[in-house]
Amino acid sequence: MPVTRDLFIGGKDVPAASGRTTDDIDPYTGAVYATVAAAGPDDVRRAVDAADAAFDAWAALDPFARRAIFLRAADLLDARGDRVAALMARETGATRPWAHFNVALGANILREAAAAITAPRGEVLSAQEPGALGLAVREPLGVVAAFAPWNAPVILGVRAVAAPLAAGNTVVVKAGEDAPLACGLLVADVLREAGLPDGVLNVITNAPADAAEIATALISDDRVRAVNFTGSTAVGRIIGELAARHLKPAVLELGGKNAIVVLADADVDHAVDAACFGVFMNAGQICMSGDRVLVHESLAEEFSAKFAAKVATLPAGDPADPRTVVGPLVTASAARRVAGLVGDAVGKGATVLVGGGDPVGAVHPATVLTDVPDSAELHRTEAFGPLCVLAAFPDDDAAVAAANDTENGLTCGIITENATHGLAVARRVRTGIVHINDQTVGDEPQAPFGGVKASGYGRFGGRWGIEAFSSTRWVTIATRHAHYPF
Image 1 (cartoon, rainbow, N blue to C red):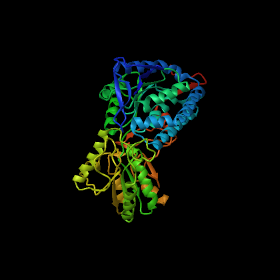
Image 2 (cartoon, rainbow, N blue to C red):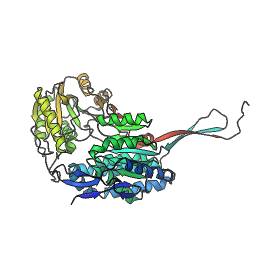
Image 3 (cartoon, rainbow, N blue to C red):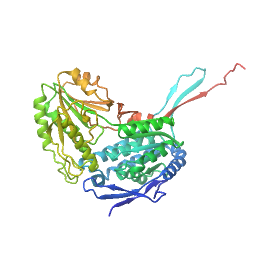
């Protein structure tokens, strides 16, 4: 029997006002895994009503009481590891290691948010008037609209709400259509069990065809005061434009066209292992995945042979099989899209080093291409699948130029045994994140996470996340009566 879930509004599980539902599909089997409520604009208004009504009490709640809720939620999430692994396998095709990583990082995001609640915020300012005291105080904004995606559902579902809630806001989440349970309702369940007051967090699920209408209704509501979105650059542009039209700040963490750069002084075996992880973890469905592996020409032959050999051994298939490394993509159409990128590139002169071929359902084999021409769609388009391009470069200037040859700027990995050399190259790469002697995939809850250029703006994580979802207010206190000219 499929799982059945309603919307989560005002602390209660409620059906959509229309009574409509939508199916949540298991990508590996193609069967219906869950049926969830399909919200409409009326449900969005109900969710914002609940969040707005809960705001004053939540913002005024003792910080230590708020912190205790977050810490309880982190422990509850940690204890759900096996259940979340089973859920993510069925809902997104995730392998067990990826699911447990989601749980561990999601719990630590909650703990970092808990610490931020009682951390000092604000400054004492010098004042022009004698005897006056100036203060810069961080205050919550109100209701925050959050868009949580499916690909790292627990990490990104928690991240979408943790900093806004910690800053004293209330939140309405629009859960991603391909993982409404893991990226939305699961997070709400954990926080509800931890004692989060009714209405502070509300979750909307919807049919894919209604996504634009739901987003417009949510962002355009006057009571929504800020927006955060993680997802594709194409959709992020729409979200950003809509938020700007309504003069609402937004944090946008969008797509990447990330490069793993293997410098001449790299350890080849380490570089091969790092690149395999950075490209193929979660079947390449991570915004930080390495789409391009750029190798110094002095190492290119050795690296290519070892990399191809390792990639050829990566088992693909059933996410429930503990041996599987490359699980299914989120849908069969996503796998066909990746195959289309391969076919287009090969048709324009690229060579398949390993992999390729037709997908089986939603499963696409790990694939590496070389000699991909600039005219290929893959040259500019984010692969978002188990696919990368391997290319050689002659010197640092060429490596930097290739790494920067994209409209995106999320993350970069620079493999080198010389940190000074790596830092020199890193400072020339235009990304929001760079990892020296490591690959592109990395996330820590205390670090500023986000990109530049078409990869978005604003930062999640640490104090930067709190600042993104609060405003600075200037407050003065006069300790003596002022003298006025009239």
